Length: 87
View (spheres, rainbow, N blue to C red):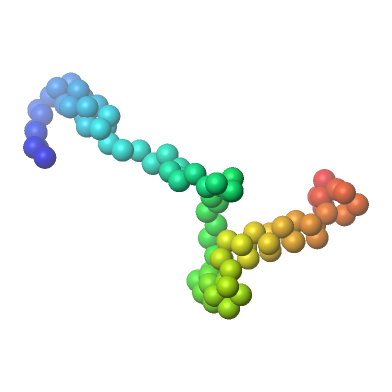
């Protein structure tokens, strides 16, 4: 890559715009899953992640399957008479 120096900011702008146009942008997941699932980023305590991974190995399942099951159970338990708590 060649480094160019510009004394005048107006001269630099076309060069900057050209470089930005070539810069790849992050646009979310690039993989499409056949089962229709979408990704969701969550932050968990490291010990919880470690225990989840161990449980997944013990159960011969994936961590996302266990997480999906736990979230679905939590959401189902949260419903009272067909309405979500807090509605």
